[in-house]
Length: 163
Image (tube, rainbow, N blue to C red; front, side, top):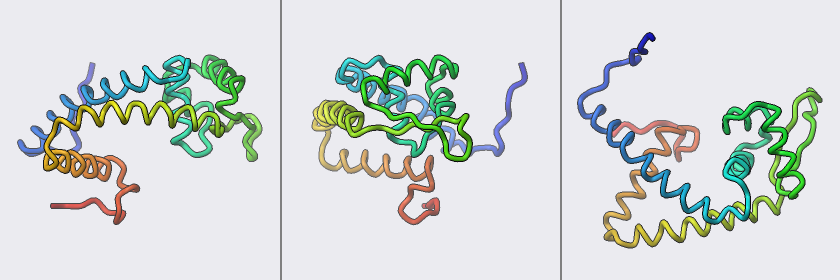
């Protein structure tokens, strides 16, 4: 097996920062998933993740959802059939190519997802309440920085900041 080499050499500080992210983000995601799963309104975890994906991805395709969830197209099609039957997702043929399927979330699907997110947010807020206001602000600042680094199109000024 051939190892991939990084495009550029990171500084020791960048390596430490990257290590902290790799060590911490999975822990945070585990807690978030745990709370989201508790309040998923009878959906399977793949159905719930698909609902999240469709909600956050405008005009998402069946194949993009399958790639995101890690299912084959036939398996994803069956999963989406179940979401359509529950009136959580709408499925329609793409205008440009009728062989492609576009997915969109329904108002019922958004309500289901919103309820689960609110429940998870409430539980996470309880954990964060243990921190001082100054540390809570530090967490919010770090999350804003991470969002801007990993999705630059969402940053407030459209450019990555160099501080």
